[in-house]
Length: 281
Ligand SMILES: NC(=O)c1ccc[n+]([C@@H]2O[C@H](COP(=O)([O-])OP(=O)(O)OC[C@H]3O[C@@H](n4cnc5c(N)ncnc54)[C@H](OP(=O)(O)O)[C@@H]3O)[C@@H](O)[C@H]2O)c1
Figure 1 (cartoon, rainbow, N blue to C red):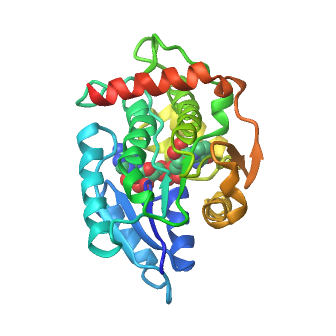
Figure 2: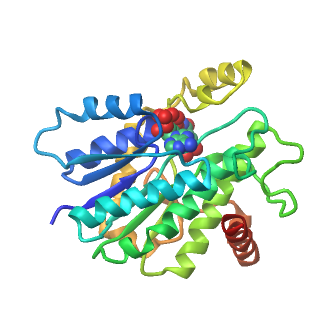
């Protein structure tokens, strides 16, 4: 039986490399895309993969709650049509870094909404499908930058004193807290936080000021290509030896200690509750 994966952030960078490796490994992929043009390019770029998995596209914007709900409902339709409602792998890869404070239509800061809220909503929204799999896995892409982040429950979204680095690194810290909170609640659904390292992608050029884009170009010139993290992400998603390591943080396919504050149960629980409140409001 062919495996079926959902990949967000599938249209560029790390997500696109994962889509390619999964298809080549004969895994069917539902790719989430926000831009029609990039979705067409993805289809075009994957069309020569011989004898691989099938690629399907779901269009939607993960930066607000309505967008995530639309994506979820299309994913469930596709899973019900062909896979008896089953999902084997969820790769939460979509992410942004944003210069300046921008609120979405729900009133949430867009980095927080895209990088954290959408991961929470999408993953919980797909629990029932993942529970139908014999070998379910969930990956959440965090970042090295989470080590330099703190948490302030009175300013979770950084609406006060927003700055680009604080907004991004805190969202990546929340990814690690989410993985730990989820692993406790759903021990039968293995979940992993991924540090992809510094990777040559366009993330720092998309929602950023000219200065931030310039700094990103300079900084990322020493990064790896996107296949480097994708190779070990696919390994974590398929190798049985990782199953018992649910809830942990991985770099280069290896277990690493995350930021010490991510081991605080009170923080894990409080962030979960605060996120739940925001999603339900
Ligand atoms: N590059 C690095 O060095 C690095 C390091 C640590 C962590 N990461 C993390 O890796 C992940 C992937 O980033 P990347 O570097 O590969 O950057 P990227 O090439 O810009 O990829 C980001 C992906 O997310 C999608 N996306 C962004 N906002 C979205 C939205 N509102 N709705 C739906 N999709 C959306 C983008 O779609 P479009 O193609 O339409 O833009 C793109 O496919 C991110 O979570 C990032 O935080 C990257």
